[in-house]
Length: 129
Image (tube, rainbow, N blue to C red):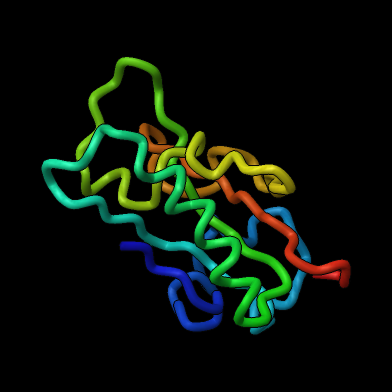
């Protein structure tokens, strides 16, 4: 399961440092969509299923008119155990897809010092999103 819809549907994102830190853009832009949560059923985790889920969000958002799709993944450390509650936003490596880019926001812009997050954006149109 994946939570993905217009960024404006998530009021907390308007005040969070993660999506908009270091960027000057309209926080009320309905054309920017957000991926806020990934859930893989227990017993199926650790099989790389987050990658195809992340790729599927691109087509899902594009088909519904999104101009850009953002994710706010956690930057994980190799070998460090992470609980499900911490990584529900997905690890940063899962949002590496062709056409995506990291925003100007520094990796430490959100989350906690020991759980840094970043913003990844995938532009879906040729327009100025």
